[in-house]
Image (cartoon, rainbow, N blue to C red; front, side, top):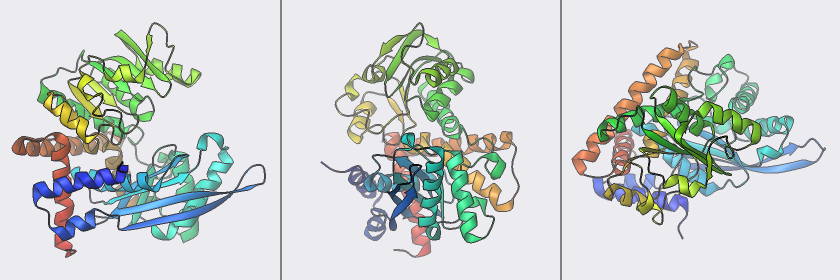
Length: 413
């Protein structure tokens, strides 16, 4: 069985054949340009020293400095980090921002750590990698189980080590220390713009359209709230790792979020039916938002999917085989490279603002985000129609072509 990274290489191989990519460029793009593995000693609250394993993978910087989040997770692997670093290369390219792809991670369980232990781990990670990052080299950001506070500690540690105030080394920071307005829900808001464009293409009226969201973390909560509040859609089902809830009359995502904050899960929300994650995926809805894990729609359950529009906010939630099945069924999949790019776009905006020490109002940030997402969708859609391929293939073609062009111009192959 191939790894997730090998599956990504196979998808790149397919794109390379479709666009007749030069063998040299193809070979470079198949592998990360550099990988760093570090050991991070942390003194725990009980006085013992634990040594954590950390990673930073830099995939490609032909279009600009490496860019990508840092994950704190007990099951983190170098394979996952490699895969996500490559995805960041393509994600930055499809939305046409001048950055490359990178990713970082630490094998740990932040839920079992105190605030002090998390701070010492965050600073220790930067202590180990600071020579390999920087505003003009590699710019980390938050990802799974990291947040603005973790980014604040990391940015502060970098500034101490270098002796310079340089907030642009990290994005996703609190606004008070160089973060950008509009960053908190940027991933979900960007996805909403892609959903709006996809709905127009499919002739779906989002006002009153039924929506099911798998995954009710930050992205899932925010996209459900935005679809409910701004597009007036009817959220009929949401789920988290413990299960889901369904109500044909619709849910208020903000009320469900309050329930989850109090109880630890969306399940048992008043006047709803508890359902499984598997059942949620197969509901007859207009829009299915995937905001949980990778590989949740596979060859096995793809024939049972009934949504007209599928939006991927998570990384890799639909396998290649499943995408082909959905495409043949007439289901329009909005791929992760497009749907989840809002976060990195506003991270780029944050980096720009940090660079010249002038910060935009939220309205300006959101307007620029909307334009970037709309333009990226239209470019990918044109490629899809022209080549008669699904949006995942079309998006990848646009992204790989843009990176390859930069490599040619720089004389890499």
